[in-house]
Length: 225
Image: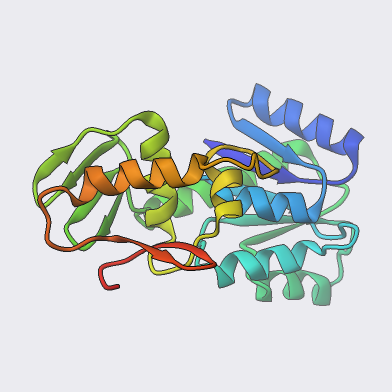
């Protein structure tokens, strides 16, 4: 299971990352709110743990933006603010659980397990589909109209990124950060070349293109132009 931890207290983050990894979880750490939001939007995580009081970018604002972007993954809020109003505010913002600091690490693990178990029971989708294009996330098999499409690992990652945001305009910056983990523009045609190859692969033999260019903005994957 892949967890994103958003925590600006470096010592607390080290403790949590070490403990979670020893408990069998894969963990990424973001030291700030903006970085955490970018990683959450770009990556595929099973759960997010975020501190509430982050400098310049509140943890609850992160949750609001994630929910606004259509991401339903569970979010656990950690906070020194422990009044009833604080906890209610965290849940109303879209958080799934709220744990007050200081806390016992065993309780954190129990809450994580409960959130992941709830998500599993809810039947988290293991397949993405847009029109007749299907992507099985477990087998990494891509088909369109029953035709199997052979893609490289990078092309699969690019396609998954687009399919998870079907109908939304995706900018070059979003693609560079989410697919290549580049936080700067290399001033090359890297994105354009891969988009072109992906288009050829998924549109071959079909009368309906699915990846569309939005001039001056980026790309959008959808069934209609």
